Length: 215
View 1 (cartoon, rainbow, N blue to C red):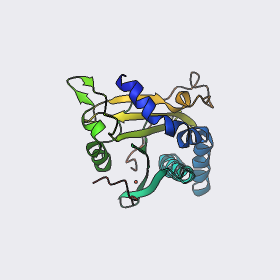
View 2 (cartoon, one colour):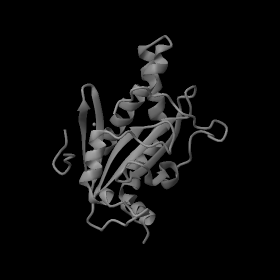
View 3 (cartoon, rainbow, N blue to C red):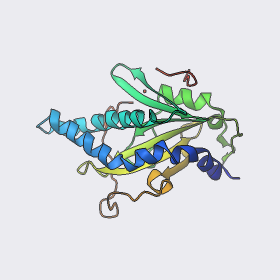
């Protein structure tokens, strides 16, 4: 079994459950974020607030959906003042969320992501002599949900992927569309509205229950 197939198989319980729920609600989630922004601002400052409202909404939605599953450990952590993120764990997969400008953009090299990537053995050994090694069956892997809007002018959902990161934060060793993995039709025709870079400025970046310790 190669690395890609191993990760796909490891993610399957999540794809059959909470990630399918999350993906099916992604469009509504982004519309909710837009409504939240519009309710607070009436000027062009709203454009600067959109990424923050998407961040909060995306993390809150994952948290709420994960609470429906008895076999998922879920919590919201504080990374720094006024910055929170959701972390879920099902069996030996830990997942957080990041907003990026395109599906291939590398997430920021933050302290909590570094801690997760270092803690879980699958990620420490991903990049070895330019080849990705297959984790052992008892290794816990760390995955990141990547999301972003269609463009700066179109705040609808542009993409929703799930990825694993190599130990050096230099590339994704696995990066697939959740719409495709969950066999859910993308709500928008992206060929007519391609994803373009989004200036997130200082993008915001997530207390752990037993079983999840990022230190």
